Structure formats: C-alpha cells, structure tokens
Length: 81
Image (cartoon, rainbow, N blue to C red):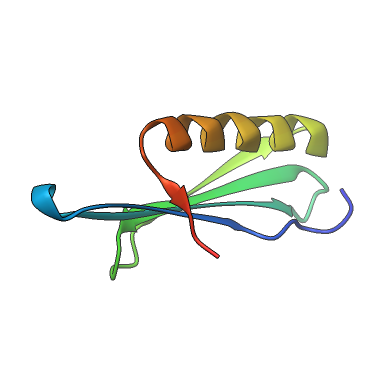
C-alpha cells in the first residue's frame, strides 16, 4: 500500500433528538502490508469506539470505505472539513 489516505470525518446532528454523532474513516497499512480500514464512531465529545478491518489490498479497502461513506451519507451524516 502506498501512503495512508487522509481521514474522512463525518458528523450527524439533530438537536430535536439530542443527537450529536461522529464517524471517521481512514485507510492505513498494517505491519504485515495488509490494508486496514480504520473506523471510529461515537457521540461528539467522547472517545467513542474504534474498529480495524483488514483487507488483502488497498483496492478492496478503498471500495469498503466508499461503500461505508455512501451508507453514512444516506443516513444523514455530513462531511466535516
């Protein structure tokens, strides 16, 4: 894998439902050369949760990132700077 990509920061806010969530997606490489999709999510202002998904190559990881981002946009998340 070349260089890690810049993270994609998403937020979803709805004051009427007391909702303030974040979701962050990024691609990195593992020590063994696998592509890693790093997903972090939770309530804004907290550390939240973190999950690492391993992929055999960067193309598969990039496609997974694209699919997850599309799903989050459909659920009302917006990109943050």
